[in-house]
Amino acid sequence: MFDPTLSADLEDGETVQAQFRADRGTYIKAHVLLAVIAGVGASLVLVLLGNPYPWVGIVAALLGIGVRGAYLMGEELRATWTLTDRALMGPGGRRVLFENIDKARKLGAAVQIITRSGDKHLIKFLAEPDAVVARILTAKGARR
Image (cartoon, rainbow, N blue to C red; front, side, top):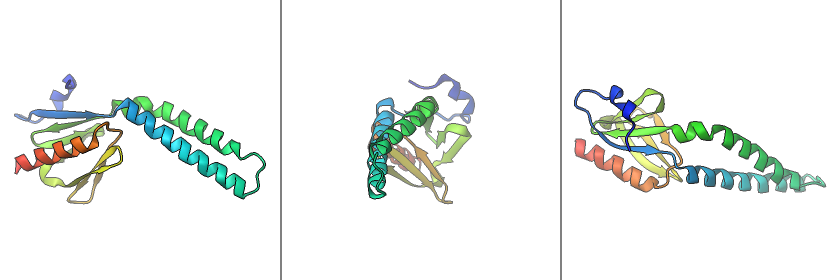
């Protein structure tokens, strides 16, 4: 389903090919994994420092990352990237023309776009990042 408000941002004759949105399940999994890793790390540090309550590290990590994740979830899940027949358009008015894209690669559950000038853009929390990379590279190749 395409965002109907998008048409105002398109140039004359430009058409939408695909839209990429953050996946709720991927967002939650990423935050759970981060909380577990941070919790274990924090507890290990507390053990090495001789703290008699190393379990506090796990609790603090779960609470801190959980609250942050819940607070930012709405904003992250609203982020939409749109692939047109000419460019990749992102949140905040970002627009990267195909001829300016140097690389598109998977980074975990995200896709990193690197431009010829060195600018980097991240399409985060994707359920199928490999498919998104392939779609962008195919569209870019078709434009040549």
